[in-house]
Amino acid sequence: MQANVVKQEELYWQAVLTRSELEHQPFVYGVATTGIYCLPSCPSRRPKREHVQFFRLPELAESAGYRACKRCQPKSELTTDPQVELMRQICQYIAEHLAEPLTLEHLAQTFDMSHSHLQRSFTKIVGISPQAFQEAYRMQAIKTSLSQGEDIASALYDAGYGSSSRLYSKAHSQLGMTPKTYQQKGENVTIHYSISESPLGQLLVAATGKGLCSVRLGDDQQALKDELFTEFSSAEIAEDCSQLSDWVKLIVKHLGGKAPHLDLPLDVRATAFQKQVWQALQAIPYGETRSYADVAESLGRPSAVRAVASACAKNPVALVVPCHRVIRSDGSMGGYRWGLERKKRLLEQEHPK
Image 1 (tube, rainbow, N blue to C red):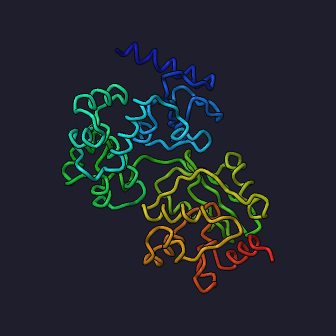
Image 2 (cartoon, rainbow, N blue to C red):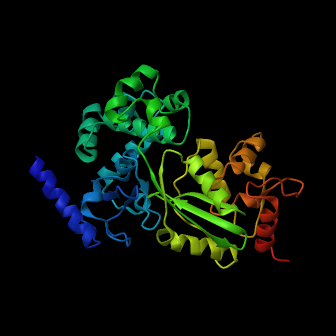
Image 3 (cartoon, rainbow, N blue to C red):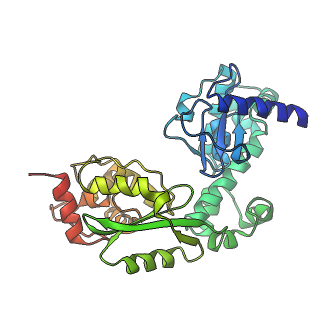
């Protein structure tokens, strides 16, 4: 059995090296150093073999904590046969109903299949049972929520655990530590940063191996550095201008009006609501603004205007998440974490008269 697995993975790896699809054997691969999963045909640079994991379905890669590649869009582009596509639909249904006690009977009724056929087909194609898949997705949801600063109780119930004892009984084997320890410490993260001059003063850009974790504007280099070290006090932080040079140049060009769209990878801590707000801000076109009330309305939370303003104020990646494009309903600028004068200049840059 193990020999067959090794042989299959070697076949997958050769497909990745040659950027080719395997007929009747769709798969995606995840890269541990970036946290991203791709199609074998993705034009991105080939990773090292020891950093790669293979998955039959995108949903399995996501349950393992990987994010879909924006270049090859594996979740929408993967071609599958009807039976595999049905299993993908079941995976998606499970992922969207984590808080519910899904039974095999419920799934069979929902997808008009017999219990035995669903269990057998799902296990054959996905590699694990529906129950095991739900458990894996729940645990990944817990990890994501805790790493983003959500309190343990909320993370627990959002992921569908009816009691804390159920989570703690699985914590050591799947989190590697108790939820509280995972939330407070976790594994050390390496962050590289660069500070340079920009049209709006000093610009600090910092990133993990997954993406940007901080973009700050200020007047004093040491103050920016101190803020970074305070916010990420448990991380290993090192200055590295060369590694971040391409991203820094793009942001500086953006400030000069020469690169209106900043589509850069992010690795930021956020509550679920903050993430929704920041995604809404990234959808605001260059040259346009929205009011805090507009953003709240777009999220289906019209009464959450103050919460939207708070999320804007806590945005850790200036410019990449354009919180400067959000103003008050009366047309006044409102607040800006990096200074109102900078907000004014940014809006003037994007709204030439």
